[in-house]
Every structure is written in C-alpha cells, then in structure tokens.
Length: 235
Image 1 (tube, rainbow, N blue to C red):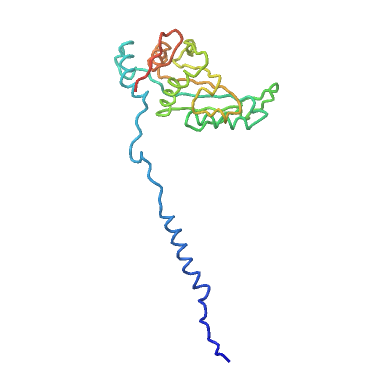
Image 2: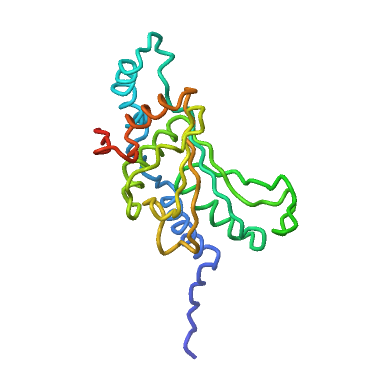
C-alpha cells in the first residue's frame, strides 16, 4: 500500500477573507478621503448689484440737480419691490398654487408667502382663510438684481411692447404694473410650464411725490410710454 501523504490543511475561511476585507476596506477609505473641490468663489465677497452701483454713481447726482435737493437724504430711492400673484383656480385645485409658488421662487430668488382670503364669498365658493395667492417682498441686493433683470431682459421680451403706462402711480410715489405672462422671464423653462398666469409688480419708493418717483424709475431705465429711447444701464 502506498503511503498516503497528508495534505496541508487549507487556511481557514476567516483568514482568507481577512485580507480581502482589508483590501476592500482600504478602497472604501480612499474613496471617502476624496473631498469635493472648493468653489471658485470661496472667500470672495459678492459684488454689488450693477443697478445699485449705477444709482449711487449717476442717478443720485441727476436727481439732485433736477429737483435741487440740498439734503442727500431727500434723494428718492427704491425701498422694496412686491410681486403678487392671485390664483383663483386654487379654490378647486390647490396644486395650481404650488406650481405658481415654485415659479415665483425661481423668478425672484426668494420663497413666496402664501396669501389667504380674508372674507368668505359664496358666489365664488370662497371661504375665509383659504389660500388663493402668493406674494414676494424683495429688499436689498435681491431687489436691485430683480429690477435689473426685469428692465433689461424681461420687458424687451414682451410681445408688441410700446412702453409702460405713466399713469399707474398711486399718488404716494409708488408704481404698479401688471404682467400677463410669466414666460417673459428667462428663468422659466417652457417645457415645465403647466399654465400661463400673470402677476402684479409694485415698486415702492421713499418719496411721496409721483413726479420724483417717475424721474427715479426713468433714470433707472424703466421704458415709460412716450420716451424716445429707454435708458440702457451700462456696466
């Protein structure tokens, strides 16, 4: 009989898998060590809005000479912009209001506030406290950026545009206008729009006189009806 040689015992499975676990664990560790590259603008302060710089360097001096202001605090400026959108169909379909809020947030860069009905109207099936609209109040840098984009980009995209009406002042230096379609804003994607809706935009100024508010908005580039050429803000 041939002597049977004893074969060496194979290494235990735990020992075999130990090295594999170490190697795989090392790969995961390397992947975790990779950090996302820093943004190019980290540590750099955000620049001032272009329209605000134009107002401080040019518009203030023109208004001071035109009206003869002796105190720099008398020179009017834009304090806030209110964008309001009423959605009557939200009474029956609340999802429509959600789409409008999302579009207003994209346009203005700020989350809108839901507006509720103050009174109940039986003819319209409206109850007090029901959400029927949305509004955004812009101040500071967002206000100047929105106004710049609205004057230089959105208004020229209006179909058959012949200038905004000069009689839309309220007698207290505030100007309001209506927009029939939200499609004039380039931030809106045509493929994502489910329904066309308009909005009301109100420019609130620090003056109580309509003539001063008109001069302010005209100097900022608002193309009022009757002007030969709208003022183009140069960067």
